[in-house]
Amino acid sequence: MFPLSDSARSTSFSFINIALIAFTVFVFLQQLITPDPEAFIYQYALVPALVDFTRFETLLPFVTSIFLHGGFLHILSNMWFPWVFGDNIEDTFGSFFYPFVYLASGIIGGLSQYAFAPDSPIPMLGASGAVAGVLGAYFVLYAHSKIKTLVPIFGFVTIAEIPAPFMLGYWFVLQFISGAISIPFISESGGVAFWAHVGGFLAGVVFAKLLRRNGTFHISLLQN
Image (cartoon, rainbow, N blue to C red; front, top):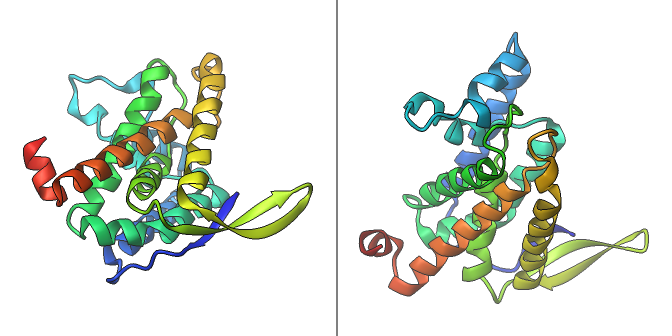
């Protein structure tokens, strides 16, 4: 299933959401034009085997890796989701706290994947954890929304309006199952960082629940 649009309309211009997407595209362009793409990736991507929690510089890739991508399809798919859902989350959290939620979800997603393969020499890159945080927050805050979705059925593709909890819940369960299946192979092979998706999504759920419980995310941060 692939989302096309949602029924929830934001009440303000999503400047920060668009800025995050634009900056991610800018970094990807730097990857394309750099003289040594492999060195660029190893400098800014998250390589679990290089992480040393006593050295701050080795922790920076938990942030910088969020803005790297492995190809056109990777960045297009990752940026499409905040384009569809991010405006609503920025509208709810506000322009100040939305980037915190986005980056924190990305960091937590990276830590989640790292926890399953701390000795892996394979670079991790992509905004999937941060994007998953947006989806997790949307799952909580926009439970009554409908998602216009491309749905493949027996080789054909149709468009259907699907309740947000069903679509995003299905996505999360699929990531969790795929992550569980991938555990024996995480350290030896590349592919999709499913546990980054799981961790990021759960982070978004927690941030949204704190917001909803206390009324404003600012108060949530002070009380928690």
